[in-house]
Length: 185
Image (cartoon, rainbow, N blue to C red):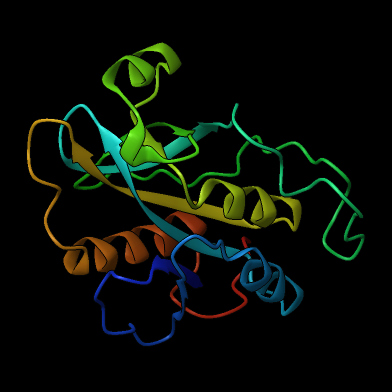
């Protein structure tokens, strides 16, 4: 499993999980592509975002109306077809989080409650959706976890316990224990 985290999230790396820390303002597309090339198929992608209330959301799907796709440009034939179907991309097991559609926006800190309602999403995020699309391009499965900052309350508690729960849930939903290169039976 490759876990991609915002650089400011504190976490001791769990055993058996590769961790990549996303630098501010830059994605981790190459880290996801490299993991796919090495045989990885399970990804825990994490981001901060906005929602009506603080908490945690696991994506069941996404809406990406703003900006381009990370799959444009020359195709990586070694990863898969040009624009694959992303149906079934997301692992969204039950857990101590809400489940719903995540909308990709240019900057979630500038989003408004009206935009959230207009899109009909559970949360808005600026990172991790592009990484999920790249993982799907290579045949990967994704648990996308968003730490939501509500408009009227403090952000959700620190990510340590939630990340451990999400990693276990992703591995369980994927059908394999935590290890690199696990594939569905």
